[in-house]
Image 1 (tube, rainbow, N blue to C red):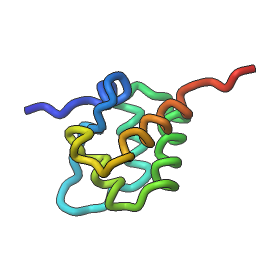
Image 2: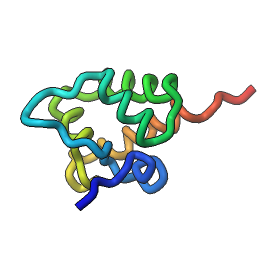
Image 3: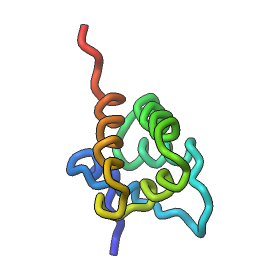
Image 4: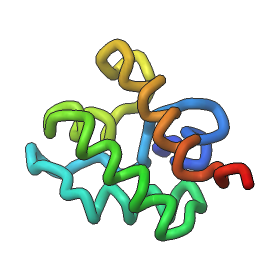
Length: 96
């Protein structure tokens, strides 16, 4: 069964980055940003912005879950909405 892509995440609010972590290794911020950039067609600046906010807001276990989730239901309450807010903040140009 193929993983959902991050593009689906952004478009349909799915939270799969499409690359499950191997073993129980913690996902590094640079890897998280890189996957966002590739799979959501975000710019490097946008993906770095999202990753920076994710790592500032969530503890590592939630980040690992976010990285490998197959559906919003796999995540703690509030995480999907918060993540979508980060994506929105980092991909929407400020007015003016």
